Image (cartoon, rainbow, N blue to C red; front, side, top):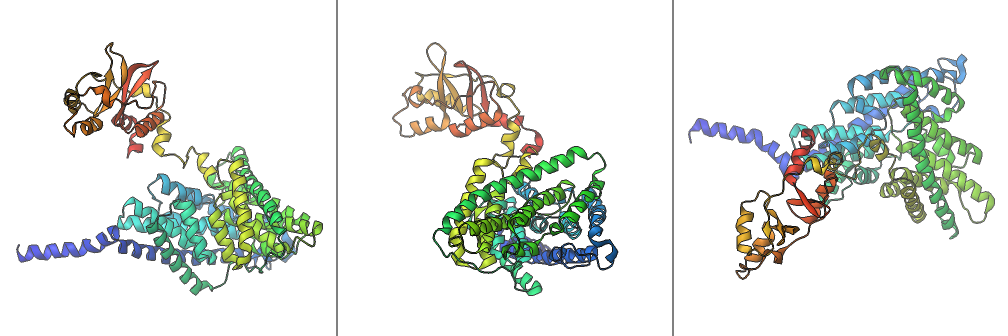
Length: 587
C-alpha cells in the first residue's frame, strides 16, 4: 500500500471510527445517553423559566394559583377580569406556532411519543422540542390548566430522537434514546429521577430489558444532577409526612382506591368528550381556535381562579386540609373541565399534573368525610390526599409502578407505601374493568391506532384472503415415499405442499423441514408421506389477512392452504401477504 493510500485509509478510519463506536458499542450508547440526559436537563430548566416568565408577564405573579383571584399589579382596576383576555392573547401566540411549525406539539404530548416509538421507528421531528417548549410555556403561563409532564416528555424525547438520528443509530437504540430523553426531562423538571425512569420504561418503552433500563437510569441521573445544580435540590411539591396510625385505615384506603379508579376513567372520558365537542363546534381556521376558545377558558378562570396553570399551590393547600369537602369536590370537577377545555381548544400541556390535582382533591374530600364519620379511625386528612394523587393517576394512565414511585419520591415516607400500593392496585384494576384504554392510548385509538397490535396486522384486517391467495400447487399422495416427496418439495416455492388421498381430496400438508428431519436418520426413505402429515390452522377465503398471518405464525409454515367447506380452493403464503401490503407499511 502506498503512503498516500495509507494516509487516506487512516483518515477514513479516524472519521468513521467514533461514529461507528456510537452506533454499535455499548460504551457509545452510554455516551449518547449522557448527552441526551444533559440536553434534557437544559431544556427542562429553560422550560420552567419560560413558564415562570410568561406567567409573570400575564398575571404579575410568579404563580397565580398561589394567589387566586388577585388582580394584575399593572391593571388593578380590572380585578380578576383581566383573566378573560390572558388565554386569548396566549392562544393568538401559540395557536399559529403549533399549527404552522409542529402540529405534533398540540395536546398532551405523551401519546405522540408512544406512537413514534411503537409505529414510527422512534423518529420525532427535531423542531418539536423547540415548538413544544415555547407553545406549552405560553399555554400554561397564559392560564391553560395543564401540566408540565407531557411537554417535557415530548421535548426530551424529540431531543433523544434527534441525537440518535444524527449519529444514525439502529432503530432499537433510537427507541432507547427516546426513552432516555423522556426520563431525563421528568427527572429534571420534577426532581424525581426514579419517577422519570419508570415513566419512560412503563409508558414509553413498555420494555424492561437490562440494557434499556441501565441507559435510561444513566440519562435520568445525569439530568436530575444538572437540574438540582441549577434549580435546587427541593421537591416540586412540599408535602408533610404522614403515617398509618390504625389498621382500620387500610379499609378506607382500599375504598379510596376503588373510587379513584372510577375518577381516573371519568377524567379520561370527560377529556375526550369535551375535545369532541370543541371539534364539532369549531368551523374556523385551526390556528385561530386557541384564541377564540380562550374566551371560554377565561370565563372559567374568572369563576374559579384556582384553575390557573398547573395549580400546585392549590394542591398543597388541599393536602394540608385547608379546604372543605364541598369546595374540594368543586375543585376536582373544575380541574377536569378546565384541563379538558384547554386541550379541546388546541392547548399544549400534560395531563399528569391535572390527574394528581384531581386525585388530591378527591382523596382529601374522602379523608375529610371519613374523619367526620370515624374520627377515631380515619387519621390525617392529608394522607388520603396523597394516596388519592397516586391512585387517580394510576386509574387514568394505568401505570401503577410510576404512580407508586413518584409518590414515594414526593413524600420520602416509607410508612405510607403499603396503603399507597393497595389503593393504586385497586384503582388500576377498576380502570381495566371500566375501560379498554388509558388516557394516553385512547387518543391513539381514536385515530385508528391500536398499540396492542402490530401495524401490519391493522392494515391486513382490511384485505381479504380471497383477493390474495394463489392457485393450489400440485400435491403429493399420502402413500408416496418420503424420498419422492423430498424431490417434489425441493422444487416448490414455499417448501410446503398439500397431501391428497386416493380420491384426490385434501387431507393435510407436508413441509420441507419435517420431511428433512424424517429422512435424516436414513431409515424412513420409503415411509409414506402420511407419516409426517400436518394439519395447519384453518384459513377460509372470506377471512382477512390478519387471520391468515396468525395462522401462518401459529402453524410455523411458510404457506398454508385455504379451505372452503373442507375443499382446497387456494394457497396463502408469507410472500403473498407481504406483496399485498401497501408499500409504506412494508417499508
